[in-house]
Length: 362
Ligand code: TRP
Image 1 (cartoon, helix red, strand yellow):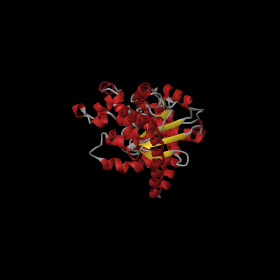
Image 2: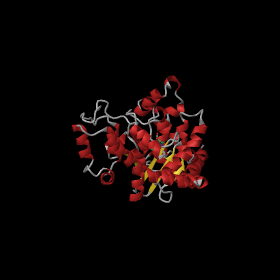
Image 3: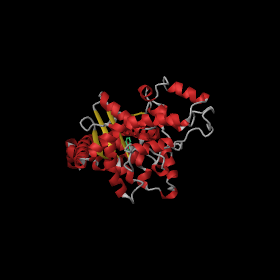
Image 4: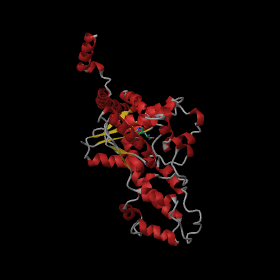
């Protein structure tokens, strides 16, 4: 069996550097390495609507933002299929059948859903669609027979739930669906990049993100205002690395060649860290270095985005073609699912013949 990659994002805002190190960069590496049969990247608008039902315009506006961010990162529509979730109706159909295989209490135990319900203060007013989105996510993954799902850590409970649905389906109806594996970023700093304020997660509502499409002066302003070690007051004071956002970002972004280019007096990150811990290295110097690293990393991304922005109809055309291709793939799986569930009445000549005989006997 070949390797099929599927992943996606909710279009609720522009993508930020947390998405970049946590997932986008990996996708581009996977794309360029080849070694897979298909790679599907989905803009999960239907999932975004599960907690934005009263604001479809927000979702609508952000589809193009996410598509531009994808292309800006170097995802190539010649090599991967970019598509919009709501344009593949088979995903709804699959979800409807999977719903019978999942209990309410199992959904209530999903840690990501639990945390999101708390975060949104839903309590008793949880929309059913939101509550069941892990099931719809299982449909997204299985529809394409994905073997590999590159995601951030927060999505692991979704993968676990998907595997359970696959096993349950296959045990009830016979081997039909493919069990996927999550693929996390290798670098721990990339798993959960904090916001510039040092808070656990980068999020639009906290205003602590650096966006991929950010202009250079904005990036600099944000880097210079980053949370560091509050006890590192004078340059000579020893500094701490734990919880020091600037160093977490360096762990996530900096490569050996950045030292040769921007900070040749240090051999590498270990030496820089040791100096900081010893004392005698000021925050501003480290921030200036991080700014240079981020600028170098994001400059080509921003430039590519600007090119695509000049031809928006072309970007929609990419999404349309991709959605058509995705629909063909999902239709194949849905046909297999319906056959396995024996709800393919009109394709089943044997069924009709057996009913003929049954009523002849009566
Ligand atoms: N839940 C993902 C997010 O919040 C988006 C998503 C929807 C997804 N369906 C998926 C990711 C299937 C991977 C596979 O960003």
